[in-house]
Image (cartoon, rainbow, N blue to C red; front, top):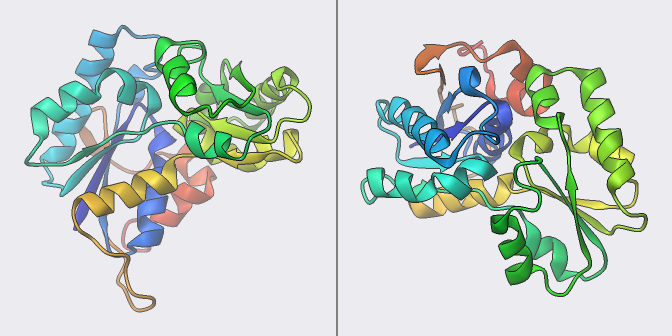
Length: 256
C-alpha cells in the first residue's frame, strides 16, 4: 500500500504522520514544490499547474491514493487533479475542520493564510458548516513561511500576532493551513482554553477508506518506506522537517 501526498512545502507532514500512525506499514511519497512556495499568492492557474506537476512526479511511484495536503491547492486545483488522475488514483482534498469546530457552539476562530482569509471559498464553508457559531477569520501573515523554515522566533512572533487578533473567550480554533498543525502546541499555548481543530487525521482516514485499507493490527508491522520529491527530483527529507515531531516520526534507520 502506498499513499502519495502533495503540498507546496512541509505542511504535508501532518497528514503523512497521521497515515503512518494508522498504518505504520504504508509506503509514503511526499512531493512538494519548495521552489514555488508559497502557493497562496499565486494565480489559480499557476497554482494548479504546480500542483499537477507535484502530483505527476509522485504518480511515477504508482501510489494507491493521492492526498492534496494543502487547503489552498484543494480550493483551486482539486477539480483538475481529479480530472487528470481519477478514477485510476483516488484524489483526496483537505478541507478546514469548520464543521466539527462549530458543532459545539460558542465562539470559533479560523486561523488561515491571508490569501484564504475572507475568500469566497472559506466564507462558503462558514455559511454551510458554521452552525450559527460566532466565527472570526484570523489572517496569519508569515506563519506558514516561518514554519517552513523552522524559524522558531518567526513562528512565535506570527503566533502571537494571530493570538492578538483572536477574540477573548474563543472556544475553538480551526487550523486552516496544514503548516499550522506542525506548531499546534505553540498556538494552543498562545490561546489557552481553546481547542484546536486540524484536518490531518480526517484526511488520512479518508485516504485509507478510499482504497479499502483497514487500520493495521497492533504490534509487529514493519515500517513503510519513504520517498521524498522536491521540485520534481528525489531528495532527502528537508532538515527543517526534522525539527517537527511529525517529520521525525517518518524517519526510520532505513530512511535516515
